[in-house]
Image (cartoon, rainbow over all chains, first blue to last red; front, side, top):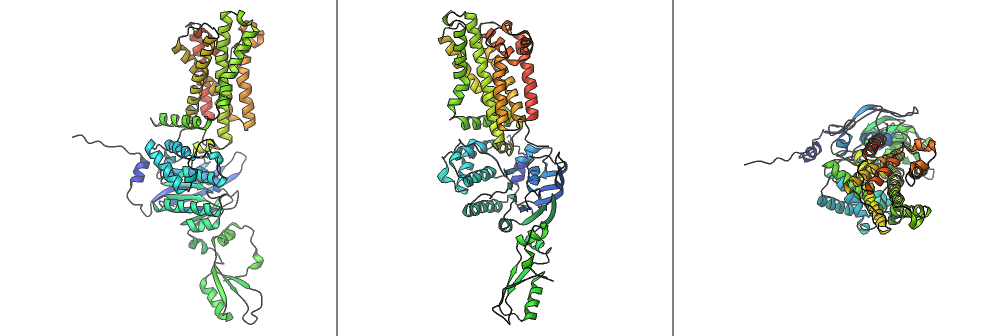
Length: 318
Length: 246
């Protein structure tokens, strides 16, 4: 009896693994430096490790180096120095092999306007080496998931900007790659479409997909990600869970109240490093009507990046 | 195998993306070259033109068609892919840049097959006596396409803008036809231009096509020159057509 053994590629072996190991590294980027020919230092030694099944959001001001960072990960841009590995594959030495594990949505890309939505997905699924039947099935799934069923046979040129954006996201999803790299995936989408995309990302994560996305929407980063990387001036200035980032602030909680002696006075807002300090202030001032709010990622972002912030409205204690 | 599949897939995407642009394709591949044949034939005396002249005009029109499809039309597609961000879409796929270029080349080959066949049929209808060795003709045409496509790839990869690239491919496509002895004998050219024309791929292509259509087989030097030019232009084109920026 002859046993037939089907050889699997490293990526197929990777995907065939039964359960995600808790500390397994999906993406490792070490000391990435990108200096352009004109001397511009877009990335100045960024190191980042992303675990399998994790969602990491990259935030930072315009021009901070987020897209440069992601383009190096997706092998589109060669770093000046540093290394990138994707599921153990050296992405600089073997870009195609690394890309087989990735679904990529660039910040900007064109579509073939005369192709229908279905053709777009089916043909590009073939480029991801899916068989004809698999490509058809993958296209059907992605069309349903991105709520484009009504547009299936329409030419892409007739779609709205938001729908075209969803097509770019759908192309990344084809073939269920173990890693999604999404550069500002929801920019330009209306709130409903944005939430639909969030749902798509969450469902992908539930099946073990690792996601790295850049965004300007703090709410998006807060809702979707396990960890957040803040990039400013080409450097990684913070990386951690929201709780970890909040501990780096001297203003993690805000207390809103009115003077108990003069209830008609203006609302006062004070900031505290911890919840306990806020409680102490309440006790000391004998406040009866107040509200305490935890700082948001936006507060962290402004604090860490030094972006303009209306400091006149704040008073920090603690 | 994967590479072949990738090439066919790029071809299919390009084909599906341009299938509704039949008008420009017909203009580039058939109408202009056919009109040039009729024009040259009329200038040469119409029905009184010699069979040798008619053969030259037909072979010239075939090379003109290859130039329009391989440089102007194909260059336009490559430029469009690059400057509308479609190239980036291909770059996100696990696809080698050379597979992308070969996929687009395959598209050019398909176009050339259609246009050459149509022009040959037109030539027969208009009374041009041809006795081609089809295998040899296919080799000549393939080498010509590879050579001209290489030039189109170089322009598309290096152009700084869509309009600049478009202008360059159009100029190159027309220049290679009208600065080379494609529609007329080399002896009719100014001496300086004759020397320059000896460096142009269309000179070798026109000579080889004409000889092949006339039943000749002694085109070894032309095939060698076309082969060397094809290797050189494609090698440079592949080198310049990168997914990854430095």
